[in-house]
Image (cartoon, rainbow, N blue to C red; front, side, top):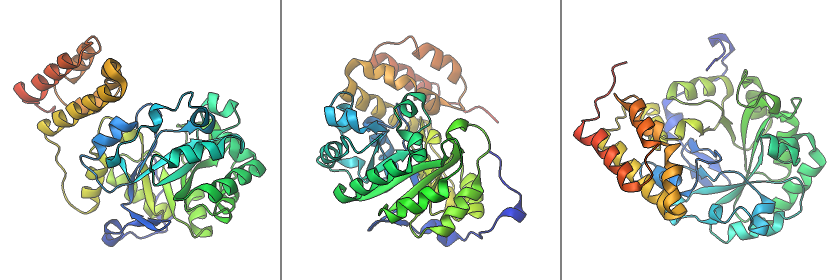
Length: 342
């Protein structure tokens, strides 16, 4: 992850910053937040995160309001355990159509708020004029935001990019604040850059200066040092942790401990316990196919241990939950989970 030189940094961090919470609406949350990642941060995974982090704000993966309103592809997305709160349900839309129906249905399940995604760069989302494409359609975006503010009873946030094809994040940030949005999360790349290319921290810094609502940073944070350097360049109020959280549900707790000057150790036994809970939750939601859903999380659980690659390869051919648990138990227990020296 590339950062600017020290002479470019404009904020001096203090330890008190990491002990304080970010206020979004009338609620307070730790500065490290579990960001949305489609296909990964579903209810089973969020429940595992709660084994390590009880108070951090979490997001659901993105869902189009049409699928929620028509219940065509969002049924499992609406299955939420009480322990997952505080939780924002992330939606996207291409117009005001179906927004009210979807939001009312979502609010019935008891989430803490709604997040409008105008950051997603995926082709199928952009093709429908939703996600990051909405940043180029400011009139429609304003209509959606004003409608949301009138019907969302909890927190209303927006996750955005630097822009769609060209940078207009500052204008969008001002518009969002005027529409009553409680916080902004910014991934400082264009839609055309997707998840690669240089991150433009100056955009985040400038937005932080011109709005009074909290500004959250999203993009490539994997360590406390990453977060510290991003703060020093931008002055943001919090950090969304997305890809770094996948397969490592203890990541938010880890970051908080390092930020407070403490050490963090996750034992092989704790990894196995988290993996076992995760698999159980997946089976509860998806039935036997939960085993297949578990595979994409496996790398994080076994990363850095001798034999991890061989275990991943072996478990790709294992079809039942008892077999998976037996292999993991042997890997972390009988074999001692000997860690690779680095």
